[in-house]
Image: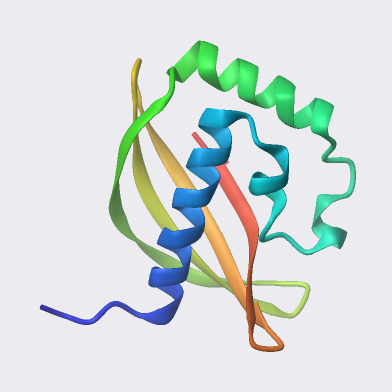
Amino acid sequence: MKEQSEELVVAEKYLKEMLKADDTANFDLYIKRFEEKYLSGFTQDVFRNDIKNMHEENGKHTGYEFLGSLRNQKIDDLDVHRTVWKGVYEKRDAVIEMGVYKKNGVWHVIRSAVY
């Protein structure tokens, strides 16, 4: 079996954390891997509203599958590794994009979007 790249291992770990944060409405867990400057305007109220809407539309998550990697993207001179996942929810399937980057030896999330 092919060994997974470091960025894929990190993306999956952070995806699991964020899915747990979504299901439990845990704001602190959700923002744990973001640099503060990328959270401008993203408050607990915004998070709670997003979670409420997601739960109404999707239900809670029941699983996920790795779909693939996208070409890296430069954001603020950061080399962002992008992965795409199938999110399996109670009411529907969705596509999840995760963007992670390494800065000063520490991995961060810069994007987590559910479509």
